[in-house]
Length: 215
Image (cartoon, rainbow, N blue to C red):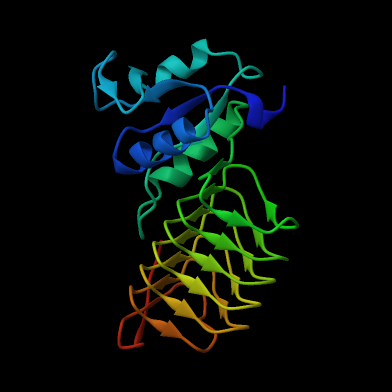
């Protein structure tokens, strides 16, 4: 069975899990419930219940379900990445989650685990790497390349030909001018306008000052 056709289990039960469960419901995508160590088994949440903690996943056949990562992505917090890595190590696959209100060009490439939230627009020639989040109302223009495990927060605008390397975090409302490259692990503060390349492992503050950041 195609990964996208399998019923899914959501990892996590916080705010981001609530958003992805809403997308699954709107898309008529079957899902069993949530896995979290923070709530009791049977606790009711949006459109489902808590199935148990991480150990319960072993009772579901690898080839019959897919996972959706419902853990939010924040700078300097690797929990989402670590959980995905652990589950893939067990052989589980991650489904893509795409809000039905998003507008997607026909030739874009979305790798496993990519999540695209409500109102996003993605233009021709775009590639988005594994497990990246394109949050609410993001605009990605033609021929952009978004790496793996990136987070484009709500309202981000990428002009044509932008490259965002792996594990970069682009804050709410950031505007990135055409052809700019954002380096791996870098963090761009909310509301910034980025008009030149950003090295890897730096934090760009709202006044466009930089400091080293280790993620």
